[in-house]
Length: 140
Image (cartoon, rainbow, N blue to C red):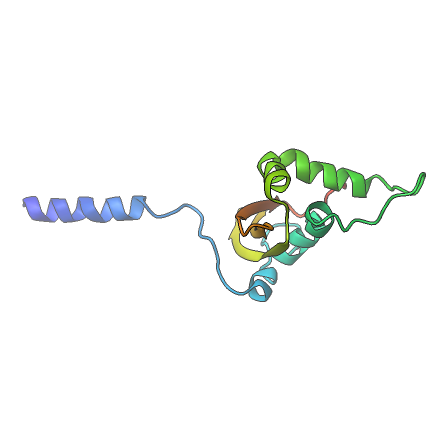
């Protein structure tokens, strides 16, 4: 009687150790096409586009002229940097050469988490996790 109980306990432990949310892997093109299943229809590619990572991390943003800002550009950049203090510190210490991704996607109940990899001038890497409920930055 003891062995079946041990086997059952072992199976329950294995099931209990399964990650709550699976990270989907694939090519950036495959991952960009993954869509959320909530009320708002958007893809992982949309999340990366809304984050404007090139503007924020590679400083390719268009220079703003007096009176030309719509508020969304500045707000979007500020949100990324304020919410990503670790990413901001990484940029100061190492700089940024490339942004790759998405490299992983997690489907949440009403949102998507999208992993993007930042590579620095000295080869260091940082994984940035973007989370979106489908509302572009600067909206709402």
